[in-house]
Image (cartoon, rainbow over all chains, first blue to last red; front, top):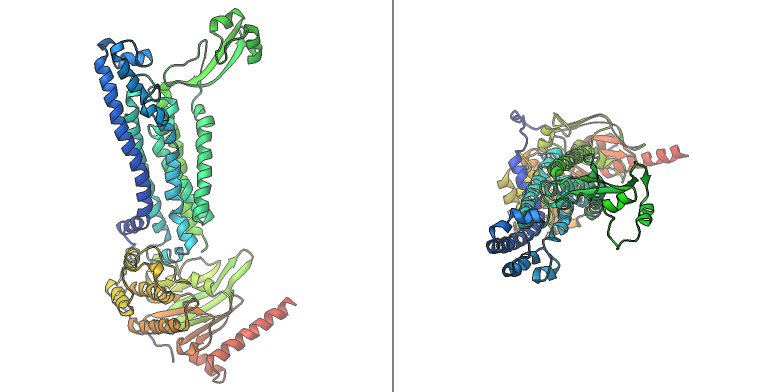
Length: 359
Length: 244
């Protein structure tokens, strides 16, 4: 046998890249199960928030209807919670507060109430990000199908981009929807002053923060997938990294987004304020430690801090540093900003690793 | 025109060269057998040709285009070792995925080939036999209407009957579509029935390359099998001595 020459082929047409809509279909086909899982989780949460939120709003409206005009809505907020003054409204007040886990009632006794739900939801961005983002590239690398996928006409960079852009956008949008629903659900308690307006404590599940953490979690997990090249280790590693990052941010980082306000006197316990720290000095400004102060002012019941007047009598001052509730949106934008920047960086790094990776 | 043109091509992994100073030109229209022991650089050479990895030295062009470029990807279809495909998808969706990953796609060709092979479209890829999976991978590669078909160890995982069927499919497809094919193998028996061009690699270097007929003629009409084995034996001895 000898090599036969091929008769001249027609001139090749200029090569066009595969369109994004076609690649989007591939992304959908390969990740619809993961998206359905994330959708089911978020859907159940949304259904719960919608139903309970409706009940809460109804209980709040009944309470308001019962109370005299002078005690309704904004007045409750001023007073720091619903009054239990009128005997006629006492039952309605207790019913309303049971949704917050105060007092008795099925919601309060279930342990899942408006006080707890926002904290439970803190885990959702991390879970959704790790379970959808972890396998996005790791599964392909682990199973060897990258040798199929990366040698198709579309090319590996375009293929990776077709996953690393639409998936986090969809997840982030869905997460934003859930956190908006949470804001509505908890609204009556905010209006009634039970919890502060935009409380620092609910920082992670309201505003833009919940959505931003979902985006960041996806990016971390996808990046881990390319580094580790295996699905389960990538998911496990990203769960650990993300939980750590989340806790460190909440406990140690967030309070430093702006210089705290420092005051002396009573604790700045205004609605939604975040107290960062407190310390004692003498009236001439020399720092003293707490034990010295406490032994000087005498024994106080557990958990009771000495009043400014009592301290002044012993020539001490108590100082407080805190982030006021008015900085809530500023902090949301700060945290959302660095999470967005970190996510974009990680996604770009993931694409770069795919591009450079020797197969 | 040459379907593969390598000039001084080399790939280094850390301090070790997987392929070194490889200069080749494979004419279009051939079925090329790429032969060599494990670790001789077969997969490295094929990966460079399909653009999976980039050369450390030299260049490689496929159908006149730089390997790995958009144009070259469009003209090259690759079936990697063990024919990796998405196991969880039904055959029909596997085809759709491949169709949406390529500009050139001949869907009629893919479905009529699968019809002929009796591979049902509803079947999950993971539930196909090894031979069917290899045929599906080949079908997808051919539906891309490539100018060059690259197969890495297509026979390694197949039983003897499936091997014969698979290579028959490749030969027929190459003839029908007037394309070129390169496949790597370490099975040297009966190679002359399949490959009309041979490349022999040893220790990351090209030991022999040329049309099968010319190679055998140059070695006094010996069978290709003997020609290959004597080249590999000589290479192995020279490396053993080099170590001493």
